[in-house]
Image 1: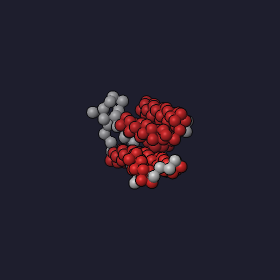
Image 2: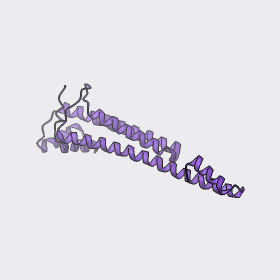
Image 3: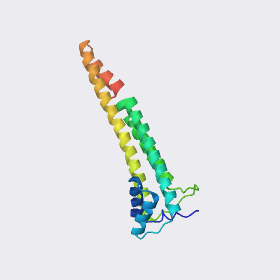
Image 4: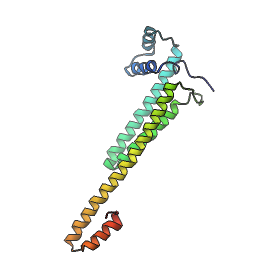
Length: 175
């Protein structure tokens, strides 16, 4: 298995600083200068490869955001569940992508990185669970509103309370 790049072996705070500087529009040379000020020694080529990976991840996130916004615009509230699911799946794939180097080999992580990955996966599972709970709640609310509409319409047409209860129970699952 290939070893981690020199950037991957840096403390998480330094890697985060590199990401912040890049996101702020700093060039590779400007980032190298800042790293020298912090007594961090990395090669320009390693930093360039790392920045390229950051750009690829950023591009993927931007594309996902565009797709999610387009779905939300086209389908309105009903697509909120679909958008959430797409975002969860995207984050899952990004986390898995972070665990593999450019050669497709699994990278080794220090305990902090492993904890971060485990925490991220746990949050994805929680988000997925919350997404399912939201769908269940929306369906329940829809069934209750539909049952109220049936009851209102049924009363106007003179349907008995017994028949209305039967309809609500059999069709909407409401007692």
